[in-house]
Amino acid sequence: QVQLVESGGGLVQAGGSLRLSCAVSGSIFSISTMGWYRQTPGKQRELVATITKFRNTNYADSVKGRFTISRDNAKNTVYLQMNSLKPEDTAVYYCNLDSRSVGGMLYWGKGTLVTVSS
Image (cartoon, rainbow, N blue to C red; front, side):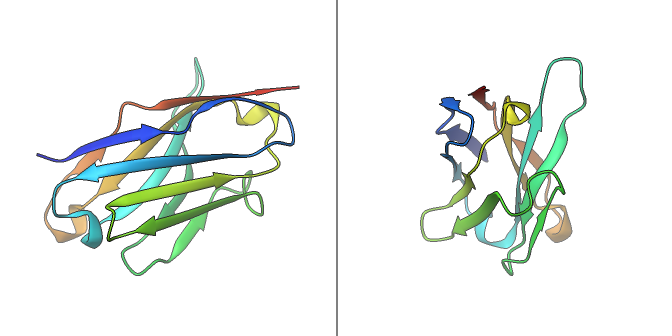
């Protein structure tokens, strides 16, 4: 059973920083692509960043240069370091594990709320 648990969300002022963590249970973490997505009310969930098992990264244009995704395979954890936060970064952030390339499935965490005040 694969479970993803996000943590690290909260309230921060514009210009501040937060680090999100996503701890994953199960043995497929190291061979999976991990991602962070976000969603605001009334909008579709959108990609924030992904990191492959080879540590190749991809970012949404809106967060390039401000956010950094990383992974620790020894801890089965993926991180999202968010700097220079803006009010428009306010959203529920979801962790995602994609193991479809190795015959597995797509998994989601329950999300963590990030609120950036102006």
